Length: 120
Image (cartoon, rainbow, N blue to C red; front, side):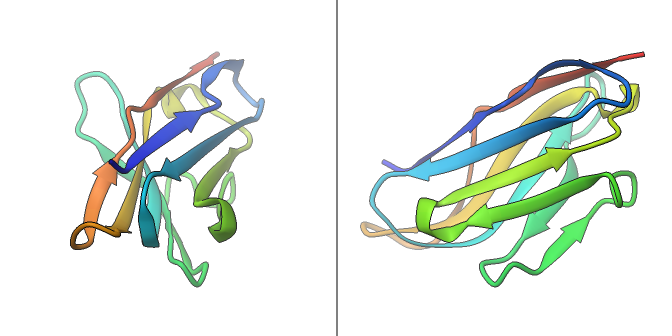
C-alpha cells in the first residue's frame, strides 16, 4: 500500500512562518508531480503549489513570493515553506502525488491533511 503522510501544521500568528512536509511510503517505483492543496471551511479544495520530478514549480497567485515548494526525491518527500502567513491562509492542507507503485499503474494519491491556522 502506498500512502502520503503530512506533518508540520499548527497554529501561528499572522506574519509568522510554518513548514509542512509530506512523505510517501510503500512499494514505489517513481513519483511524478507532487503538490499541496488546501481547503478552508465552506470552500472548494484549491491548488497551492506543485513541483515536478525535475523541480519545475507552479504556485497559486495568492501565495507567490511567500510560499516555497521543494522536494527530496531520495526521500520521496515534498515540502512547503510558508512565510508571511495571513489569516486567509487558514485551511486544511493536503499533499498530492502522482505515484507509480510496483504493483500497478500510476495514480494520484492524497494525504490525510494537516490543519494550518493563522490568527490575526
